[in-house]
Length: 102
Length: 102
Image (tube, rainbow over all chains, first blue to last red; front, side):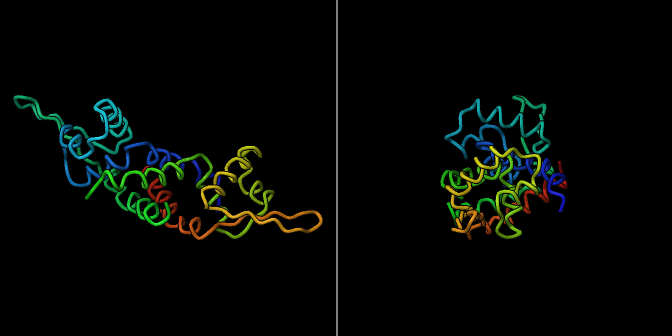
């Protein structure tokens, strides 16, 4: 096994998952597209600023897609991309390990 | 699902896995007990200080057990505990996701 080659992709992925709130936001979005206020309701301890920052990061990492519906008032929804949805098993395995050992 | 309750254990676990070199060290130790120099050989890019620091962290997190064999010269081996070995699937799932999407 060539460890040096496996390393950067693993670490990039693990770093992303290790950021505070990221796993939780992704899990909430597993339930389907959400508006900002829906996410706030499900994660009340997170500040607006933190959620805004994390959503921008998740969008730029390609995990989340942001759609603006030109209604009155404008409606903005966030949903997981395929890349984001594919994290379900990963997050579950981290969660299970954490539940068992932490 | 009570997200607020799931959060701390997940985040603790994800933070641990997200630390630079940790995943790699754990993967190397999946191959069985190793001495410091064996690990260095398999991860040549990591400094001695970094490996020393990470091994201390992994030991205090209960992922790694350090055994001192009273020989001449003294032999010190590191091996995964059950908690550490149980990370195999977690690390593999992060790795697979990273390979696919990063």
